[in-house]
Amino acid sequence: MNFTKQSNLDQQSYGYTGSLAKNFISNVFSWMGIALAITAATAFYIGTDVELYSLLYTVDGMTGLGWVVMFAPFAIILVMNFGFNKLSYGALVIVFGIYSILMGMSLSFILLMYTASSVFQTFLVTSLMFIVMAVVGYTTKTDLTKFGSLLMMALIGIIIASVVNMFMGSSTMDYIISFLGVLIFTGLTAYDVQKLKRIGAGIDHPSEHVNKLAIMGALNLYLDFINLFLFLLRFMGDRK
View 1 (cartoon, rainbow, N blue to C red):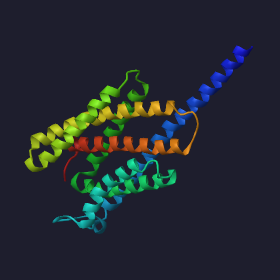
View 2 (view 1 turned 180 degrees about the horizontal axis):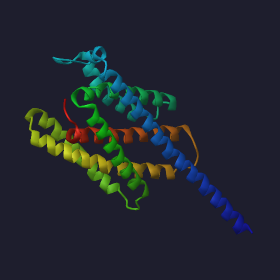
View 3 (view 1 turned 60 degrees about the horizontal axis):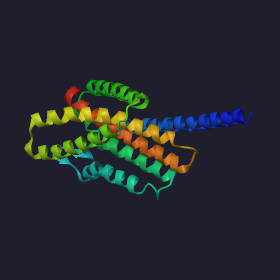
View 4 (view 1 turned 120 degrees about the horizontal axis):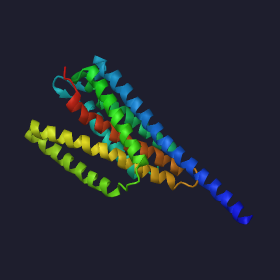
């Protein structure tokens, strides 16, 4: 009788923990979706308004505000990572929202460089690839930890190569970087989802800390999606 009671308690505990894990993953993808929606709406709004767009970009190049908008997201990522323990959940949500808006502002040039149809098609392809790799990362039994470490090193490599190519201006190098970028962020999507699944599996009770982890997880997946989209756009985008 005692064994039966203990078994029932274990099952209830497992069910509670499993529910928390699913809620965590659901929150991560919900926040990611909200951030993407904010970014897309902001990019469309500014990209289709000549007056607003001219505040960021002119025929002579980026304005002072444009440079601020370009580099501000990097600063915000640092704030979110290094200020994770000090920032409240509400503050982290607000900062993430501001980040999404700034990213939309910085990506508004896309609608002026590429046709709307090719942007939409690239977004659909990116969404499909992201969903497939997210499912792979969530369901696979293979440990992707070492795989993820290699991808992170490769990411550092293409960042350095991109900076070098800014001075070289090689179209061949740009093509190689774009191809590798697609592969890297496709793999990182699966890796990050598996990592988030493990974090969710370790949650034993709801807390503000868990909610903050969901925001940071959403940020990681958001970056995977945006970068995958941008690299694919180099191949699929039809310039105006």
